[in-house]
View: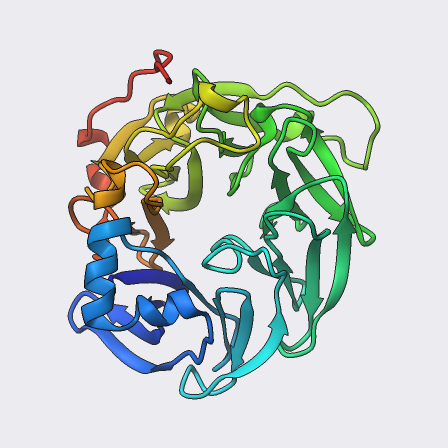
Amino acid sequence: MPGLKLGGVEHGTVYATRGLTAGTWSRGRGFERIGSIPGSNVAARLFDIPPISGLLDRVTGSVTTTNLWPIGGDRLLATVGAELFQSSDRGQSWRLVRRLPESSGPMGVLPTAVCRHEDRLYLAEYPLGGEAARVVVSDDGRRWSTYVSRSDVRHFHGVFHDPYSGSLWGTTGDTNEESAIGRFVDGEFHPVGGGSQTWRAVDLAFTPESVLWGMDCSYAPRIEILRLSRDDIPPEPSDTDSPVPDVVGAVDSPVFYAVTIQSGGTAWVVFSTAATTGTDSTGPGTDGTGSGPVQVVAASRRSGYERWHQLLSLERSPALGTTVPGIPTANAYAFLGTTPEGAVLINPFNTDHNHGQILVSHPATFTEAPRLSTEPRTVG
């Protein structure tokens, strides 16, 4: 049976998928099916058939093929491969509303691709080669049009609403020249900073005083967690040099996902890393051939986000492809969410332990977790 994959959380309802099955999850009731997403993607359908998915899991590891987001009321969005679906009845029925670029990855886009901002929906497409990088926009989740199109970056990793400034932010990658973090102003993407792997990010964490992210780079000798003070962010689009963010931590693998929560009068930022496979095609070749474990780390405002505690560390699932050359293998992740009560949801996927489970972690226990070392790691 396919592993459970965390989707979005809205008004305390946790949405998730199990293969092509959409549903909700709670600690008391577990996963409850709502309906089936009608994706035509061959890989998604194969991984949705229990006997075949079990065999493929042992060979390649578990592959993530779906995303699911609540977008208000009874409406949901989902991607399966290069297809975008919308439901107006909370997932009981679906309609195809957009075809994504042909080179899109197995999930179609990243989980960070969808954002609600000023009553509109934004989606960051994720081509892996050839097509223009686009962010598209919709008023209802059914009809989409191009909001921004760029030919100078490979793709957008995500779009994000900043609750403190009210701005719409985005992240791009993947080469040094293509990597940027910036804001959308008047239908254009304006980098706040870019031009190096320091600015190659997937997700962003917003706090009242700063914006934080981790490097999405498997080959750097030091994968840094960075903090940019809001005082250093230009109020308007600017052609000046990039500001210099503060390095506040380091991890062993590329940073993918982030959440910010409030607990006990202080804010906590939580990041998760991915155990990626193979060589980064946009990097310097043999200098980077993968990454370390899946980690989940947290730091609080009280420490200036400089003391990071490791909440979880898991290895990628030991599939056959990890030991036999030539067999493709899947990345491993820890998807993140939050609850209205201020708990963090952690969903390891394709890991050696806790694969497909949703774990609940409370900030009161974070300081009991071991502190991270910030020494540079060895890659090879």
